[in-house]
Image 1 (spheres, helix red, strand yellow):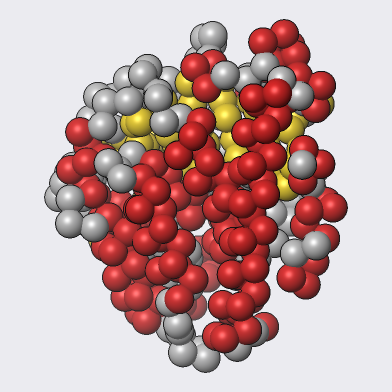
Image 2: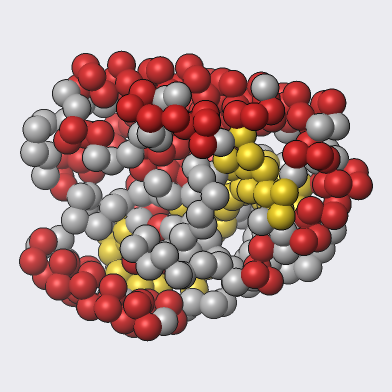
Length: 353
């Protein structure tokens, strides 16, 4: 079973896992990455983490997500997390778009999905959860990127991409990272400052808008304007600044669990084509990366993880059928992860990051 996933760890995390295994009490932070439908390959792992691994959690677990990762992690913090996850899974799976949907259509249907995922009281449950603490990132747009006129927005994005090629720090001229945090504001990443960052408390009034903003892909969706409690502006996908994360986490005993789609970690949205752009080594010291193995992925429909191209490549029925198979297969990831933890095999399986 353990050959279906890989686990890699930074130097401190590697030593700790080889000595102690990976008890859930040793995790302080969990990350959820951007990636659109790629998250379907992790659904089985999510279910095991929610229903088994973290079910008796006593001390705070700080969650940090962007885009699809934020949507996933918002389920963890609801009272019936498995039901919330199921609503997200099935809603995302069965949402149908026209052949050439515009940004208004995609945004409208995604808002329905997000509202259903939260249910009647999900926002309040997230806010009241002092153990599973939900935090997420959205990017406040500047200049041309504030516009929902495609030509203007594309021009601004092109300039941001050019600047980012030279340095990620140039993103500060185009975006302000906004951390929407759990009301307790005690997350270990609260003071991150490698990019211009604003901090806003989550609330019942802004929860739906914030979740929408974190997943509002440029050009494909409309930006979310003037979020309650936040500085006025147009907020877009948090993956723009933090696609797979590259930030310094304060030194402490706990590790950072990162269920991911594959081994590569892409710091920001504009770095996807920059194969040389990687997170700083020192930022990965306590990172524990868990991802499906190549052999596992090769047996999925079409030999790949779902992605946004599936919306155009396949008909609605073909896409649903393919993604359903991925969801079913992903259960093996969760089972294998728990088996490796319970048997102690995780100590031998872990490899350097």
